[in-house]
Amino acid sequence: VWNAASGEPVATFTAEAALMSCAAAPDGVTVIAGEVSGGVHILRLEGVPEGASVVDPAWSAEPHRPDIGESAIVMGTQRQSAGEYAEAEQLFALAAQVRLFLFGADSPLVAQAVNYLALMYCAQEQYEQALPMFINGLQIYERSEGAESLNFAINLQNMGMMFASQRDWTKAETAYSRALAILERHPDAPPSIVAGALEGLADVLRGAGRTP
Image (cartoon, rainbow, N blue to C red; front, side, top):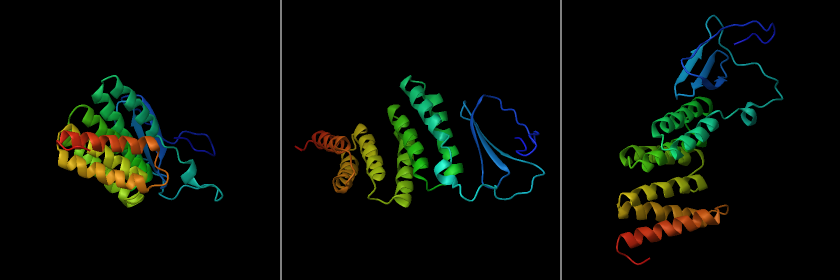
C-alpha cells in the first residue's frame, strides 16, 4: 500500500501463494486479497484512522467497482471442465467470499457464485452439499430481485435438474413447474431457457411414468 501523495510505501504484505485480486473497503483501512489457491486475506492498516475513502464527488463507486470475483469464476469453470474439482471449489468459494465482502449478502453476484458452487457439487453427485447452495442462492435472488425475476427462475430450474438427477420426481416437477411459470410470464426470458425448462419438465414427467 502506497501513500498516493508522496508515493512512499505505507504497508506491505506477503502471501503464501500468488495473489489474484485485491480490493479496498470503503472504510479506508481494510483490504481484502484473494490467492489463486482460494485463500482469502482480510487485512487492516495499523496506525491509520478509520474513515470513508476520499473520492471525487462526481465519481460513483458502484458502476466502476471491479468485480474481482469474475476472474475466479472463469478460472473455476476451467478447472471444473478439466475435472479438477478441488481447485474449482476453492475458486468458486473465493468468488463468493470476495463478492460478499464487496457487494454485501443480498447481491445477485453472490448468488451467482453460490450457484456455480451448487452446479459443481451436482457434477460430482454431491447433492447434499448442492441443495443448501441452491436454497441460499434462491433466497438472495428473492431478496434482491424478487421471486419473479429471471435469475430466480433459472436457479430454480437448476435445482429441479438436481432433483431429477436424484429421481426425486415430485420435487423436480415442483421446481420445474414453478420455474416455467415464471419464465413464461417474464418478458425477457430467452427462448432457449424456456425450451430447456419445458424439456426438463417433460423428462421429469416421463421419469415419473406420466405422459407429458
